[in-house]
Length: 249
Image (cartoon, one colour):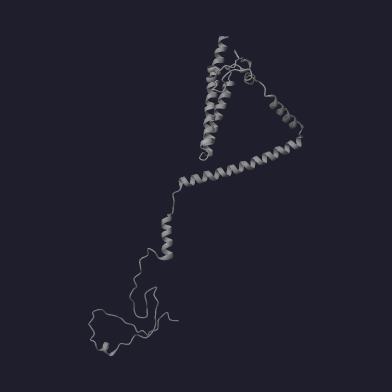
């Protein structure tokens, strides 16, 4: 008898610890949804939900353990009922149950759903049993089609999201916006370009990019022809302006 009591006490202690962990995880998730609903992302939500699932799985393993006694055979009865506040009960229930009153105890010890909920459940069961096999299969096929479509949308969005994350993390920028603006300004308005220096060439042949003119050479007056010519050590080859330009049309 003492062995069973010890096993029951150990099981209840393990269940209580796991329930407290589950309650803490639920409170943390609700707090995130209420306070960080604008910044919380889907992976963070899934991580918190996975914590809840882990606590529920651990609680199920404790209840299904071979050494754990069956809690169905244990009867819980209040030792005393009254309307006065019980501080110890309020502390254990975190203020949710201040006293074991005659109205509260039946709901705490209820082993079946409430009459209204049980009645609605029976209505759903009856409605489901009256459906034909073909109608049920059509509804199942339609529901499966909707789920598959939603799953494809979610999978595609996840792939795009992961691809963008990998590209942004692994590829460095290959362009500079400032250099692009400077290049466009230089091509459009010439800003930042150095002015070109025209080259000196023979008469009739201008520098590249300059307008070429053809015509007779300017005539010098008598005063200019009478001036003595200064000797020059540089040999020049002056072509006549009347010479036919090789590119003349």
